[in-house]
Amino acid sequence: EAGVVQSPRYKIIEKKQPVAFWCNPISGHNTLYWYLQNLGQGPELLIRYENEEAVDDSQLPKDRFSAERLKGVDSTLKIQPAELGDSAVYLCASSLETGTGYEAFFGQGTRLTVV
Amino acid sequence: AQSVTQLDSHVSVSEGTPVLLRCNYSSSYSPSLFWYVQHPNKGLQLLLKYTSAATLVKGINGFEAEFKKSETSFHLTKPSAHMSDAAEYFCVVSEGNTPLVFGKGTRLSVIA
Image: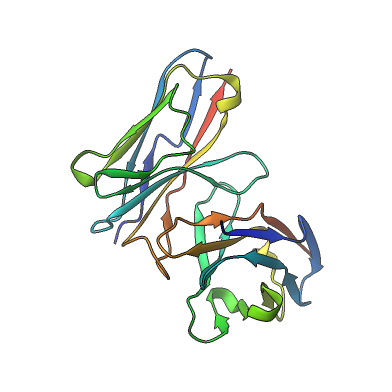
């Protein structure tokens, strides 16, 4: 069974440019997460979807970040415009459900460098 | 809100010696606890999880962890370290219908 697939793996952009990341979760997983991981830190939640509904997006900087999960499957995360401080690894994860005992399965991440 | 504290940012052991990575948690309810491992340029992989069943949990690659409610701890151990265990380890907590909350990580170095 395929795992969580993210693309691109690496992205280098100039500040003020837009960028988008794509995630394909494990088939049948209702919950999808986007996490941000800064260098030397643990992942921090940006947004969580239950099917196509964003149920937890309090940590998403909505002035420049947006996300969508059309048809409750694939998801995209967009930054416009990007800032130098957005350089980090963006992780996508999925789980069958949210709740006790449901672990998340992670993709390999997209490493963003803003110059 | 739930949280975890990983007590060591870096642990260094010799190959063949025991590994101990420490984690304390804070939770208002009965938590689920996880350990994930992240090798360089690789995705996060689940090592083991605790979900209110047996307090001693066995995971992959010889790792295990013990849930101690009285100490609010969930330390990760392995009897004998291997070079391939060198990685970043994250203790993670979740309660109820909430997403995973990660600790800051512990970098494990294994010396030949």
